[in-house]
Length: 227
Ligand code: SAM
Image (cartoon, rainbow, N blue to C red; front, side, top):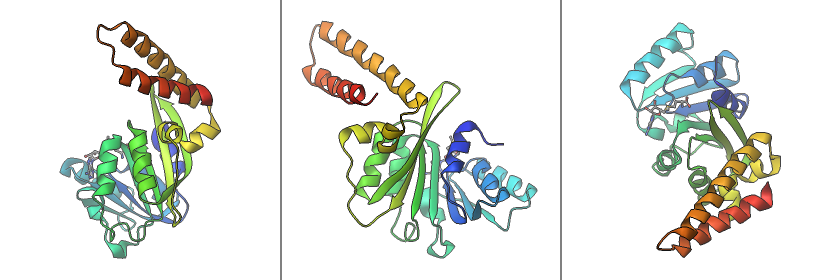
């Protein structure tokens, strides 16, 4: 039922959790989590009324209405403290939107949340920055390719000690850098080629932007050190 990307997100959710899937759209993920008895309870949160009412019908069709609450609302506003949500999933959106949803969450909405599973379509470093600044340690990461697009999945857990990442880790992902899967290598090899080309073009430009060239060269250095 799940796409390769959503399957990778699913794999990151711990057993017997109470999950809020924010921006759930069709609610595929919570339905699968409850069908497979991975999660004990789920909220499918959606800001758009259309997908929300369709999800409600699907949840009823699967006979899961007592275990999945489909709620209309912006970001984590669908979560109340007595829902005892311990895991929040935000998948299939840009990093800027994920970061903004997390930034707007209140301490009440995050009070019981121990685990975040985030799958930005783009802008992964922004998401890692939010995690570090809010005491969430990255405990697992995955990278999958589907329909010529590469997706990264980041799992993080609330910790008390300060979390530290270096620039290369923000860019490429601390766990992905260790796993170095073929998909990871292919992604960064492709980016590396792009940066090399960009630097060559910039050096031939009429007005040389040295600052931009320095940034690109820094990325090239990080990538070459890792792959
Ligand atoms: N999470 C699903 C997945 O990964 O397949 C659906 C991804 S879909 C591309 C993004 C969904 O997020 C859309 O249905 C959109 O309406 C919803 N969305 C966007 N901003 C939101 C917000 N602030 N709060 C809740 N949902 C939001």
